[in-house]
Length: 421
Image: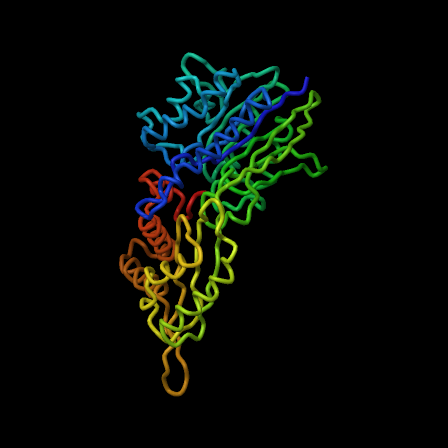
């Protein structure tokens, strides 16, 4: 008989904006979206639910986040619908002597956290899931074998043959927090399409996570075998371009997966550019800003206040600092009252000299140059100046933004300076 399930990933429960206003509403957004998915699972009477990693935004969450998660998962448990999950890079904790929140959920019976063990030679062992211990790498539900493997980093492609060598059953699903190059918008934690292809011979359905954009990977003969639903809510600016939702899947007896993408209703997210090129003073620039924002955000007064990122661009005749964030925020709120506003100032200053306009470096360029000189002055960093400069600025931006925990900053260090999705 066909088996029906919901596949979701990258929920990011616990994410919010700190000390910027609207933090409580934004915090609730992700729970509201997740609750709607679970409600659909109960309504559809699916056989199980798959979570492909990053259930939480950080490895160390608030107790109230854990309590709200249990509240949402309770109807699933009451209906007897198994919830099978793996850890993503955001769920993972560096101190392996501590019990993670994902492990706690598994031990309490709200999810089945799938995690394989390893052989001395580096192979994989997917031991049967122990309900009492809340641990194991493989579980069978109605004749379908579900294997789980969380985030294993940028070397995941080398592990694919070892994963396949460990599989001896038929009618299999792999839950794997990894992206596939050319499909995934994430810069790290991906495998090449040719590295992923052997998975199609062992698994009828590879349930992916990690990248927040939905996509489907097919074999050379056109058979879809790997599916990434993306994140059901907009986690970061830039995701407003992606469809948001999850998959309702029917796995036929012969192994064919019929997938339906069901859209969610995330809070509106808008990214707009204000072109202030040629403005001679801050007053003129502010008027241009008001005019352009009135045109571009005229329809943004919706039931749910939007999340807005404004990018300032152009060469201007005054120091960019004169156009303060408070003045810009005040002008924007007259047009559109966003729940959260981020302003990216890419303005550069033009000054006259020798009959010819000269463009001064922007603030971002000056910061990068000074930091690069400081790092390059240390001989042990030779050859890595650009990499370490980018890493330092990324850490600075994340700390100033204020919506990350120490675990996420550590994951950035592990990744070499590229933010993880």
